[in-house]
Length: 485
Ligand code: NAD
Image 1 (spheres, rainbow, N blue to C red):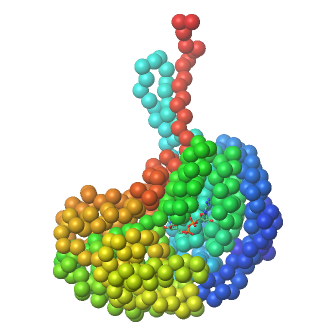
Image 2 (cartoon, helix red, strand yellow):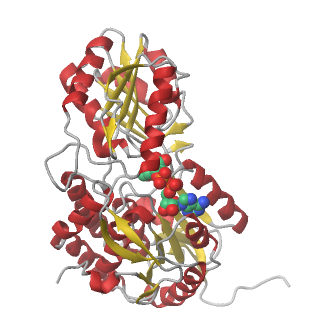
Image 3 (cartoon, rainbow, N blue to C red):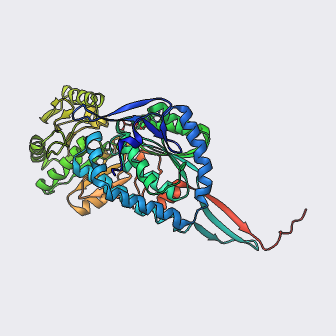
């Protein structure tokens, strides 16, 4: 049977079982064709409140389970992502407008996230502390309780599962709020995987909806931790609510990532890395290469080589043919991208390639000769646009790279000695030497600084333990201690 058999989930949300959503249903639409792929249930605020109560009750029993039982559910979930990769990948291709290799990367990473998480239940849960008293003293990690996961549309599976899997593995219950544009591949798919993997009902709820449902999963009283991935604007609102309610919020936000191309860098390889960094998934990635900072000696050849790549990359329906770029997710995003490109040209940038669109298909675009004030340089575009600027000294390159409110990912191409010096001086959560900016692995700590995030991290046991547990100090004596009172 297909894992995503529509008779199971059509028009339904999941709270302790599949049922109608209090806010009705909505269509899952394929951006490449405008076709309706299915209809999913939409949650109401009452659904969220009920899911949070259900989660809090189910979580206690789940946390008390043997570690090996929780691990087994996560291992089965990992296997299901692999067994159903083609079916689930097909949904990611059509609903999120992803080329098949990107869809395959998502299902592959989802399996890895589950396998890595399956080691967490038996991971050492604390430390034995030195103490000045006649007692034993421990620091031990306990599940946080109920965790809300809010995800965006661009990598709908990875950006949900990277928090859902470790949170469940560590004994928490989870409320999942996917983006309405990818509610099936980023919501129903995860729900079905964990349902088939044998996760007890009540521990994971699927609550599709817009910003108001996102706000409700933050505010629900039982929720202790929020794992949010999305825009800096929405992240700020969530941080404000979380601060008022004294909850922990892990925020993975926007980026405007620089690629510094050093003198003497191999031009053909640099142009290939640059095209991948800027155009992969239509540039709709938080780690997209958004600013190319290129040494003046190779600047003109670099712009030419990148424009040549851009001009020849095929763009079209990823479900229908072999293309490098699929559609932009919707009309609003496309208008935003095109608006920034037009403004950039009006402000003096040279259009070296692209700048045109057909339906939701935006041509990969190269903007040369941009200045630090240019709108294409200052803003996160979230589209297939590569703004390029030249530098002459390493100090200047570092200054340009740091001249952004964001600090998520940074790439340096060329001489490793020079790159090591730059890596020590840039404000960025991730630095990749001789690779482009889009990089992620389930065991690596992921997160940004400045407006790209609040320092919370996912990825790797240390980050996941920190994010999804609370620390308890526990002391023990053989007898009741004597006191002077
Ligand atoms: P968005 O912030 O509009 O939406 C993301 C999610 O948050 C959606 O599920 C949305 O419904 C929900 N949401 C929106 N407003 C909310 C609110 N006030 N309260 C609670 N939930 C709310 O993001 P988008 O523009 O659709 O996605 C693109 C953005 O996400 C870009 O800025 C991109 O850089 C960022 N992003 C960051 C990472 C990362 O790991 N740092 C990864 C992918 C995308």
